[in-house]
Length: 317
Image (cartoon, rainbow, N blue to C red; front, side, top):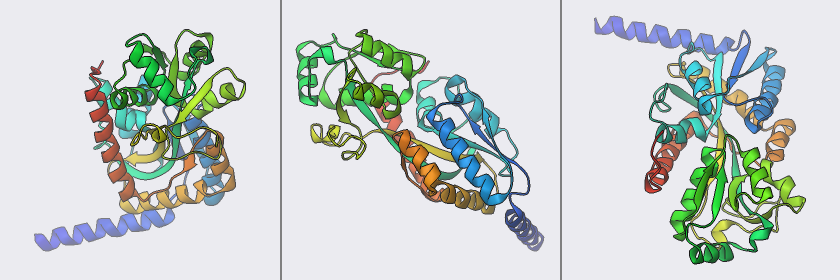
């Protein structure tokens, strides 16, 4: 019996190896949990075009927005684990949702095989110019003089948790104003309905350049070439670092050789001038990994987001 099991295991390994060699032999679908036009959608379409060129196969982007990416996540989790249906997503579905939602139709750690980290993006702390502050230190001082008087808007888990971390590290307290998405939250910030946000660069940089918002700090470890005059938040608040990321996943159970092949395809695509340019336009930088590295990164991010959310007293909805 043991010998028979060994032979069976070897046969399965051999089959998966042969399968990986011919992969892909038909179209691949990249499922995205956001609408067309979003930063993740743009990256997915750029990657799809490059992978299509390399493999000679069609690569389709399937937008399944809703439930904070949960609809797309559930769809991929229940798909055939053959590498032909994959999930391009962000920290929202894999790190935030498990701690912010009571009922999750998927398990971010058990239902997916990590393929690769693709890109990371920092967030920008912006305020309404009429607030009259010109630095992180001035914002913190104002918030401490007027506890509970300043409002911050958020239309994403990244924006909310980044601001909660800022409050924890500075001992300040802002009022949370939720939005369905970041663009309308930014519009209300410009209109003076709220006072500050920590949000993605794609949404805010044009408004900063137009003078409608004032940028006080960037959440990356150091300054960015895109905005060299904006200091890192950590320059005033040592240890503060926060951002969002994009990664690719396959359903759990996808053969390791296929995952490795997908990883190679992602690496090649992300290193092209076209795809890296799309990432940079959204304020992201290429950040490639092996499947094993992505697995460790995901677990660390899952735990980190959980600690911040718990410390903030945010109750799952």
